[in-house]
Length: 264
Ligand SMILES: [Zn+2]
Image 1 (tube, rainbow, N blue to C red):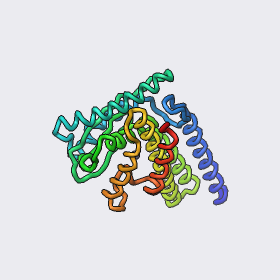
Image 2 (image 1 turned 30 degrees about the horizontal axis):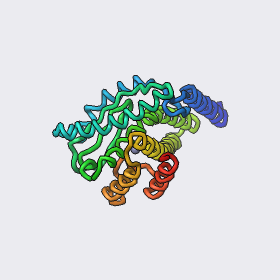
Image 3 (image 1 turned 90 degrees about the vertical axis):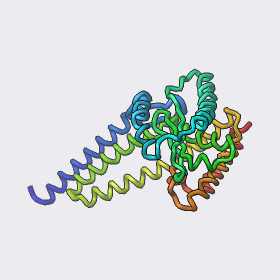
């Protein structure tokens, strides 16, 4: 086989691999009964919960373990449960059961100003962020946003996307017969994931606003949270909250739109 024949063969193999990645990705399409959106996800809510439960202790360990004051833990669980109860009631009214079991934990880390959610409902806030919040409404803003990541199944979506882009990167490597191109495709995949991340943050903000309103919290407190996080990061991106969104101003403007739309 001459050189150009080899090149064509590589292209065909690459194209087939890319199609297989695409087919596998779209065969995972399912409707999220909690949000009505069509998503590409390869795992069940039960698997999400199992993954979250399994990684929760290790996650906590990385942030100094659980904050030792049980009263503080109880307070945060109480606010989280109020939000979950309001959301579950809303869903039940439209005949949908929420499959997730939520739990809320304070992490014993004063230096990190952050909050995050594992798939399936394990939600964490650091002491560093909790200590900067001044009202229960602001705490509800943080937790409502994190519940949004769970309900919108963002982690499970990211997993399916990263499998897809790995498949594409493999296809590019096969087509080019050159590692360099494959690495570039890999880099592009990462940048794409960042972009999805931004949309995820905006979706969670919107969910947070709606959830706060239905649990009778003041949704304007989510704007306070954005400002508190912006101050804490000193303009640098270091928090889950701040790392992927377009810009704080843009995000606050969108939150204001949601408040105007959902409030009455
Ligand atoms: Zn977030």
